[in-house]
Length: 122
Image 1 (cartoon, rainbow, N blue to C red):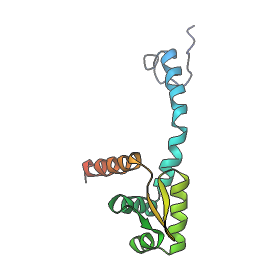
Image 2 (cartoon, rainbow, N blue to C red):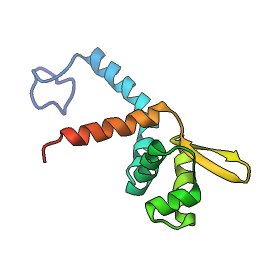
Image 3 (cartoon, rainbow, N blue to C red):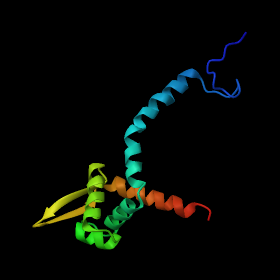
Image 4 (tube, helix red, strand yellow):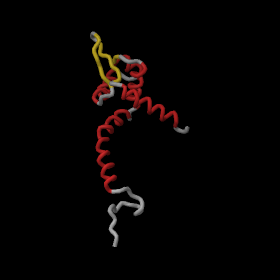
């Protein structure tokens, strides 16, 4: 009697070699840091803040609150989360704290998401 290597197979011909399966499984562990980034960007308000910072870098919390129609406290909360996730950064200009996107990677993520949305059938 032939023993199946993986009891979850739908068809004995429908599987990859075990060594390739282990390689893929190992490579998935590299994705652990990606999930929190997408969770942060799963909030529409945070995406709007990032988009506003792409359009106009160096905005203060008051500007972002006005643009996104949030309270200053609400905008500050979202900015803190974006900073903690490495999606935004801040710097001081005199008494003001200004915000911008963290780096080009953030810009690319948002631009590619927009490109993808524009190519989806409507």
